[in-house]
Length: 398
Image 1 (cartoon, rainbow, N blue to C red):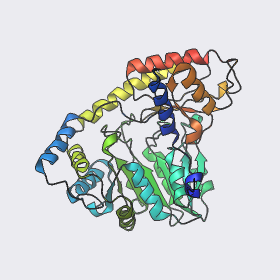
Image 2: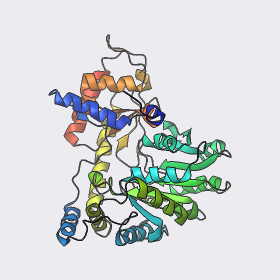
Image 3: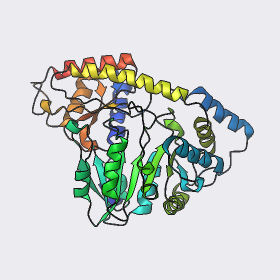
Image 4: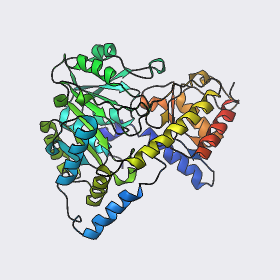
C-alpha cells in the first residue's frame, strides 16, 4: 500500500542529504569516501558551550517543557545580540527559538503564505527554500545571479520579478551555496526597490554571519525603513559548530513572531531546554573560538581556490563568506570516459562519487545547473586528497 499525500509525492528530496546518504552506502561497503557534500563544520562545539549545557543539567531546572518560543532569558540574549552586533532592534517578544533555522524558515513560510502567493528567491539558493515555500502553498520565483557577478542579484532583476502576487523575498548572506556576501550598499539598493512595494516581507537568512571574510556583516533589517518588514533568520549551527544541538531563531515583526509561535506550538512546541542553555552560554560568552574557526575557514578557502584553479575547465569565483565553493563545471558537459557520459552537473557528481570517491552536490538543487557545490569544512589533508582525486578523474573525460 502507498497512499502518501500529493504533498509528499511532489516534494523534492534534500540533495545534500541524499548525496550524504550515498556516500554512507559506499563507506558501509568499506570504500573510503571523502565527503564534501554537507554544510557541517568539522570542528567540535567549543568546550565552554559544552560546559554550559552540563551546568544546566546539574541545575535540574530545565527538564520540563520550555515556553514554545523559548526561555525568556535566552530570547533576551538573542535580542541583545541583535542590538549589539547587527543594529536590529528586535525585543525579546519578537524572538522565536526553533529546532534549527530550517524550522524557523518553515514557520515563517507557513505563517505568511496562502495558496498562489509568490516568494522571490535569490538564486543560487539553499536547497530547502523552494520546498518549504511549496509546502506552504506558495510559488517560488527564482531570480538568478551568475558567477560573473559573484552570484548576486541586482536591484533591476528584483524589480522585474515582483508582481502583485509577491508576498516575500528570501536570500542568504553569507550565501549557501555560493559563499557570496551582500555589502551594506548592495542591500540598501535592494531595499529601495522593496520599499516601493507594500506588504512584501524580506526573509534574510544570516546563519553564516560569523563566517564572513569581508570584515563587516550587513543586515537588511538594519537599513532605514526595513526593520518592520524584515525577518532575520539565524542560529547556532554554523558559527558555533552546534549543528546537532538544533537551535535556530528569528527576529521578526511582532505580528509575525506571534504567528510563528502559534504554528510551532502545534508542530513541535519548544526547542530542547538543555540546548537552549548551551545557546545562552554561546551568546553571552567570548566569540574568540568562533573567530578562530572563521580564520581557519579563510585559510582553507585560499588553499581550495589554488587547487581548483589548477583544474582545467573548472571556473571559480572567490567566495567572501561561509565555507563553500560553487564552481562552474559546464565545460565537462557532453564529455565521456568511454563508459559514462556527463550530460549535466548531477551526472558529474555521480561520476566523481563513483570514480574519485568524493561526494559533492549538484548545482541543479541550488538553482544553477552549470555548477556543483563543494564544502571546505574538512581537514586540509582531506581537501588536498579530494581535489587531487577530482582532478585525476576529470582528466579522463574527453
